[in-house]
Image 1 (cartoon, rainbow, N blue to C red):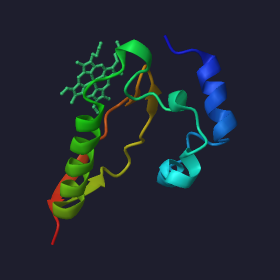
Image 2: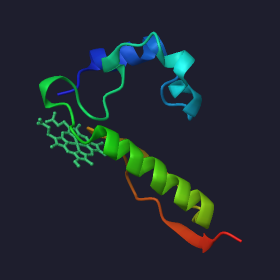
Image 3: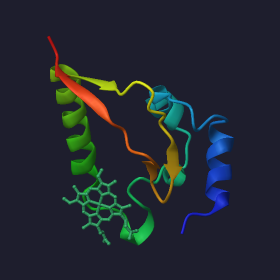
Length: 101
Ligand code: HEM
């Protein structure tokens, strides 16, 4: 279970955790943070054993997509975040995909 306390802790460290801000992961901004302030791979004794591979895969796939493709959201489609255990998109994220030129 994730508690509201965790959410409050996140807001203490970043007043706008919902903002798109990749720089929040920069070394100088993360050095002082608790190891458990970011939990994509769980924590404690059940911590994900594949976390390094998972991060590597995500980086490689993102780089390949950014290099080779252009993704465009469908006009008129409103993206609605759906916070579950992980953050989801309630009505999907339909896109058109074009080869990058
Ligand atoms: C982005 C990718 C991934 C995410 C977000 C993720 C997330 C997680 C989370 C949250 C847990 C903890 C579950 C719990 O507390 O019960 C977990 C456990 C685990 N993950 Fe991952 N994972 C990822 C990739 C991988 C990969 C690539 C592997 C293996 C190649 C892997 C293998 C495992 C295993 C074996 C456990 C159980 C560890 C244990 O209970 O001792 N995961 N993962």
